[in-house]
Image 1: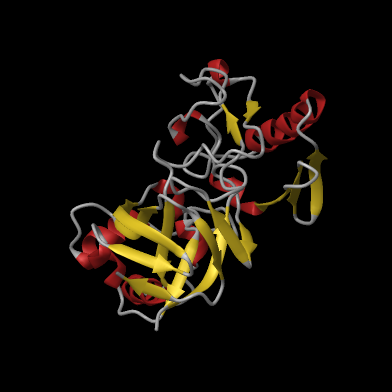
Image 2: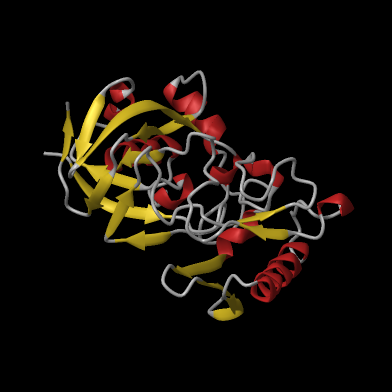
Length: 261
């Protein structure tokens, strides 16, 4: 029977993941603690508490060097720690002064990168750290969605790309499963499934962006994932993984069974 083999959440939109033993899916279908913060441009066309397209902030799609940072967010203390090469760049709570320290550290780091979205863009500064640290509101689309792929699909892509070390961290999903044929999850679109005690409706395939081109360890754009998906698998859009919604939510743990309803 298919089962969950890894779980992830991404406290800061576009930054590195935290591996989890369990996640809480909220009613409506977002993961608690996932994308609760966002380093956003000053000229972003939305309020701080509103959803906004990812291109309106500092994220992997425009700042691949973010992959070299390690991010830890403590839900209880509301403290965010950002490190580089095991050296802490900034660690603070979400007070006004704390946010400013975190913004200063990220601004300096991003400006130091060869590829960055701030160079020659004065209207984007100063950056602002938005989000209350609790509400997951900065996913890639306004609906939110929990995302999933199978290790079998990852292995198929790795073989097609001739890259046996292809890292699932490139795809930034919440749930990873094993025990299905490669690409089987794409056949679930429009269907319902249960993972542990949580029932989902599979809404769509996940169309990939430039963030997948960045090596999740080195921050270098070393693999043209979008073009390779189109070419290797004859796709109309570069798709890997699925997006799901849940009306009731619930808990999911590593080892939970996955059942198609």
